[in-house]
Amino acid sequence: MMRGRVAYAGAIHEAYPHAQGVQLADGRVCREDQVVWLAPIEVGTMFALGLNYAEHAKELQFSKQEEPLVFLKGPGTVLGHRGFTRRPADVTFMHYECELAVVIGRTARNVQRDNAMEHVAGYMIANDYAIRDYLENYYRPNLRVKNRDGATVLGPWFVDAADIRDVAQLELRTFVNGTLQQRGNTRDLVTDIPALIEYLSGFMTLAPGDVILTGTPEGVVNVNAGDEVVCEIDGLGRLVNTIASDTDFGRT
Image (cartoon, rainbow, N blue to C red; front, side, top):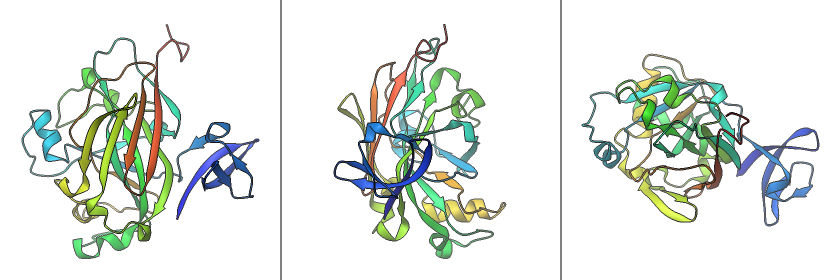
């Protein structure tokens, strides 16, 4: 089942796909642009993977790391479907990152690979923006790159794990202003989902609602204010986001 969360008429509603847009849990049907889209779940700790697709690492001229490159993201980074992400005026290269987001459904501690997928509740699309200008190095992505307000777009739907036949064979696509710019497949993950859960749960406890962003494939290009960025993943829907300027955000 696909389900999301939206704000409408002064309340937050669970919502579902509908031919005319979105259906609220109380039965009302709205156009997509009549509601404010929130992240589909209440997000716990968010883990992000860097350079977890071999071709993307090659694209950035980076050799394979010995352990997964993982960093944490704060709650202020989260933005919903159809939201606006700010592009600071002083940057020269800001890019999207279409990613499969894995949602933990059961407490995971010292989980072995063979049992790891039992702890997954479902999946979402993520678009995790990065500003290359601010990157100190690929071993330690700094706060200004990966913890920017409204720079991690999630949604539009949470999809139950049971509804995805093979999570290791999902195609990812990113369109900028209607042009396909990025394409990849989860079969090319350097460290796959069971291995990531085994790795993380080996030294810390994963809780229901925690989210693992599994990395992005090659094909990132610079985006500018006014650009529409659309991320698609097989079976998970279509996540739309717009880049906005400092002026749009009241900054000069």
